[in-house]
Image (cartoon, rainbow, N blue to C red; front, side):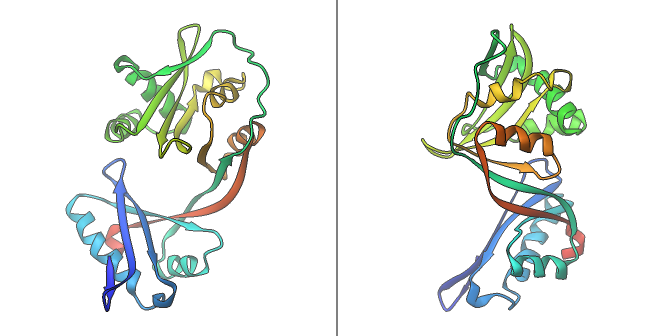
Length: 230
């Protein structure tokens, strides 16, 4: 945090899901922007990241934030896939076409399936996926496994923020099972959910829109080496 005359004018926080890349969250009061406040916070944080072995930083900038985009250009960060923020407003799901489909809580023996499903669906290595899933296990983040006649076909992780709102993480269906309507039926099990969808993944975007999600904002992502900040 940064304070001037006992007034909070800016803050920065970061977290990592894999021990390699840090996700940056921060904000500066409009009256104190373009005065180096955020850059000083970032340099201080980057020093801590280096000591913990973090290699890169990822920034999420609202597409309509002129100050944020100006700073990213100044920093020289590289563009990464953008993301839509979507909110569930209404259900538009027809009856189930898979009578044997069920969604259950994760069990200990599901880890290998989760690694396989996530790595194949998102294109990450199994070693990275296993590390990520292990590091991001926490009480508020619940993992559900979708099974069809007892055979796992997909997974969805939900971070419950309160009784009315939750955030989806790592929603995927095995590539060999995609295109059969599983995604729509799995989504029908969750209500009042907010989520992000990578803008390049038009198939996923169409799926979410077809069941009642609406785009409310767009964010641009940028990545830079920690060494370039320090």
